[in-house]
Structures are given as structure tokens and as C-alpha cells.
Amino acid sequence: MIVADRVCKNFGALQVLKGVSLQVARGEVLCLIGPSGSGKSTFLRCINHLEQVNAGRLYVDGDLVGYRERNGKLYELHPRDAAKQRREIGMVFQHFNLFPHRTALENVIEAPTQVKKVSKAQATARAKELLDRVGLAEKANAYPAQLSGGQQQRVAIARALAMDPKLMLFDEPTSALDPELVGEVLTVMRELAESGMTMVVVTHEMGFAREVADQLVFMDGGVVVESGPPRDLLANPSQERTRAFLSRLL
Image (cartoon, rainbow, N blue to C red):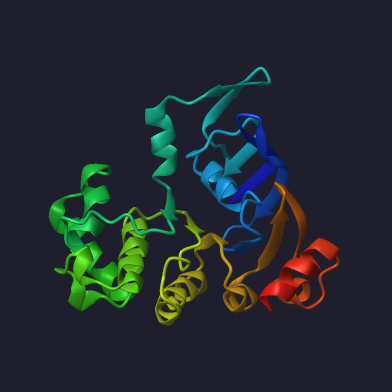
């Protein structure tokens, strides 16, 4: 589903990604871990072209992301075409980014009705299903201010799923939550993984990574330091940098 080939990203003189290569199979869950500033969130944003890459290639489901290639040269897609690609990639951010003046249900139906031109009746029926799936059927008419952080994040997950994405990206989805609310969001993500959704998750939740991920990638300084099955990597990392990082978390 995802092929990253020597992806580089600079912000001015600062090189944030220094040739990241990895692959994610269809239906697989990949968890990205690493210290702040290691490039994890930037890499995630490159996957759906919220950030442009400076070198390398990124493919999702066989399509080059954000660019077309002609005679070995890359040409950036028109924003409209890039947005079309982005429709098929759901993203859940650290901060929920819900519309405060719309109910949970209205937040979930907004993109299908406005972007995909789905009828309001059809979008509403689907939104109710999705809110039920994330355990919030009874909160359909509540506004974000009336919901806890964990509930808002579950609405955000339902909103991303409403576009029927083939891939879901999660950027530290529990880091802005009170500790007692983390579990309810991770439960929804766990169920999503079990349903076969391809997922890339930037997280500090090692228990979730150990249980749910098929592949664990440790990044530092803009490179992949180490990757492998989560239980193996967490129990017996081969790189000193990985051991030092994990010793502070586990």
C-alpha cells in the first residue's frame, strides 16, 4: 500500500528527512516511534502530500503521491489533483480539528456531502453507523464543546472513515488526551486494525504498538534507525540509540 523510496524533506537549511525508505503492505499496521524532532510527523504528512518531498518517491497503492513523472523528472500535481489523491487517505491529528459550530453528526457528514457529493440522507445514515462503531451513537447531536477529548478524537476518527479511505494515518492521536481517556481511542484503533484497515501510526503508546502493529519503525535524526516485528524490537533492539530511547519509555 505504501512504498517510500529515499524520501527527503527540508525546511530551509534544516534537513528533517534524510532518505527514508520503508514499505507497508495492504492491511498492515505500522507504528512509528522516536524522539520529538525525529521526522515522524513530517514523514506522515508527506504520505498525503500535506508536505512536499524534496527528493525521493512516495507511492500509495501504486500511485506516485503529489507528483507525476515524465522522462525521469517530477512535476507537482495541480492542487485539485493532489486533493483528489488525499481523499483516499484518512488522517487523524493530535488535536481534533472538529468544527466547533457543528454537531458530531454534522462534522462526520461534512466531507462526504461537500467533497464526494453524497446525498445528505445517505451521508447521515453512514455517519450514524460510524458514530455507533466508535461508541458515540448517543452523542450524534452533541457539539464538540460538550464532548470529552477522547470523544472528540473518536468523532475525528469517524469523520476520517466517512470518506471510505484505503489508508489511515494517525499523528500521535492520544498525546493531547488525559491519561484516562487514552484507552477509549486506542480501543477504536485496535478494532479498526482488526477489520483490515492499513494504518500508519505515530505513537508513544508502546503497549498498543506491541499488541497491534505488524511492523515497528524507530526513527531518529530523520532516518530509520531500526525496524522489525514490535515484540522483537521492543524486547531486544539491536541499535544502541534504540536501546537508549526505549530505556526511558519502558
